Image (cartoon, rainbow, N blue to C red; front, side, top):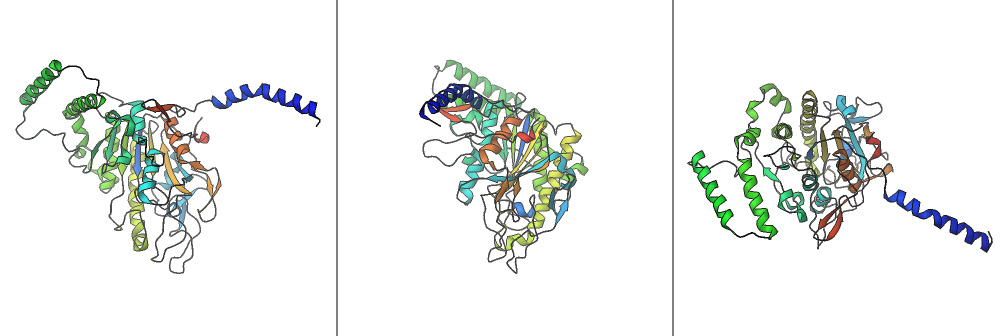
Length: 423
């Protein structure tokens, strides 16, 4: 190519660039129709090779890397899961195990938990909101008189609203038999006495000068919301004994009862519910199966299986499954090799997260890993991509910015949804 031809060709190319840039900058937004999210958190790190991405059998005694359990077929051709997911296996046509999620955070629980809740690394100048807070901020509660975001588990800054403020915060409880602490009136506070207190508060507010302090405004909002949430209509959500005994039994353990409560909260209009399963029970260590904790891991998997399968069928029977996106995540996965005690370490470079319901076009599994689920072979999904998929499923613009003061913060850090799950 001579000099004149090069300049001419470059000019033509440059003339076409603005249109190309506009096309790249304005892609067609994917948009689903889900209304609610039930997010199941497997704190400690579910081993993908022992659950939703099974591979060849390994042997901890002989230090042969591989799956701890046998695999079984599912409702989707060529998609297999661990043998202890026998109730979920026939329902995998309503599920997609995203097998190629990854992040670059150090394989340490606190940092990885933050990444899987906020989609970001820890930053010294910005406190990022969690996924639940972002959805609460964008979609609000589906009905009046309920919170947009409920956490069934222990509170933590990684679940919080960050710079979005308390309006996007959560209501939390740790015991399904009692409901959230602080919502019940103390003994001796009758309805009339409560009404007099509220009238006194209203008078004080009316007499007080207006304020522009956002912290005071948030505090007043929190008081108003607390008064609404103490109503019999909302607190009835926590009365699980209203459910049929057979259904409660089908849900299973305490974790299963948490999932049942999550379904009741969806019916009440709560937008985002996180259900924590990181309890030290059954195997003594939860999902963090170092050393001997792996020996009873099958009980933990079966517990998840029972609750998840019942939640799927219960939501479907009530015509809520297409409107409710179920998300199953942990902070990372586990490597195929066994440690010196026969358990497994941590692995963030590839692991499985699960999506179910929510009106998505499910396929059993998405993405492919190598023969030991250690490396991604096809269709990598970053944490921002996974978050963008969730936002898109709820009809949220995953390309927009949120604002920390006047500082724009991309809602998904540039994530792109898994297009194969839409349409």
